[in-house]
Image 1: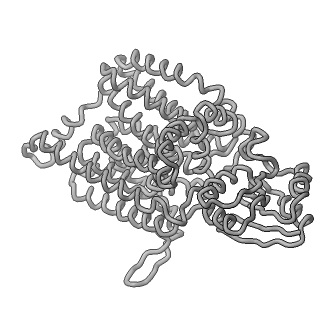
Image 2: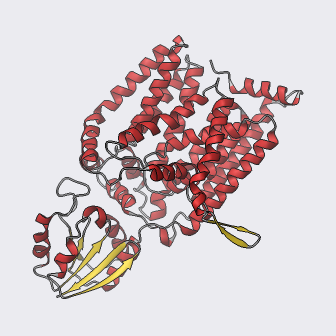
Image 3: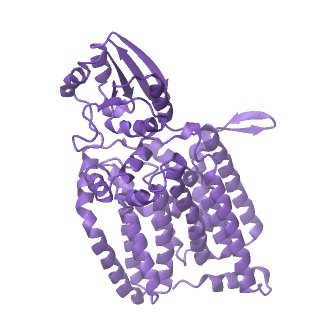
Length: 516
């Protein structure tokens, strides 16, 4: 049975200083002000650079907006047939976009959800290891570079992180106080939130179920509410299972993530603990390159996590290990068959990682060492956030759309080598109020084959001549051709039909204008 956090905090404080501890009300007030400060700082960090010229909406974010603008029932049908995710985020975004669809407004829900994760993580760590651990966890979640990065994206990842923290908190409380129905209800609802937000969280829910079964062996009181909660979650999730099977078949057939090797695994794990580490540091006025030391950042974080698990072994720190290790191993094992091992897919494991690190920092008996360790980690995080704010850029669809809007004529033909790249282009083009265009995708128009990412085949080459037969000039946008036109069939086909081409580069996007 896990001891209540207040009793443990009192006991540890008396052992540590040998004198009575201050009033619980005063301690709660100080703790609350600390968490509030972390919430405000975390919000400020996430709002900084929310919309800058180098970070316009990229393909996936534009896809989120496109789905959210559909009628809800149609959005669910489209998601089930061509996407790889459940529909909850798109439905919530649909409600949000009734106010507007500017880039900053589209991303604001992720900012707010990411900020809301800070107090949940602080409360979770406090429940396990006391107030100091709670504040340390809040600080880590407030400034984690990878959490800040995905809290600035119009996708479902910030919601997955919040759902993971909520599920962990309710699970800890449910096992500690199995007679409280509200804890089991919260556990079931947070599990459903995860399952209807991202399919990969099935690994996490399964890990939690295994953890509950293990605890039920020594705590018979949790068996009945565990079975009721598990049964309720399964019944509520059952309607989505056919869509999950269909989506999974599509991922198995063709997916963009490649097979991870040792270097890719190390880089992914490094990004989960500290994305965007500085490539150089200034020492005595000299710039010292440290980019190659990035993978070695795993070592101190691993040592802190192990210290946290060892220090609090008799309490629910083991579940944090399950949050991190269980889904990670499942994902890696499945990637040997169909690669899905990628940072954003594994983002929810950051909850387990940071909580274990927070417990490790809080483990020393003397608070000064905890302060030194926390200061070192936060200094690293602040340096990484500065690198992120200075260097990180996304696809430049707003620049492509602005150029076409300023140079195209009404009725011009524009072709897209990857059909879904039409979505970010259209998102910005309608803002620029450019002339009316005739738009077509290659090899087919948007989702005409019932696929999100159909590849260009030899049999599709005649489509290029058919689409351009009646025009004297045409525009072509090439993006992600390594995946959708891996044999590079489109440009030779266009060159055979037109005499001249003008190429304009916008980062990794090519805009080409052809003339007869």
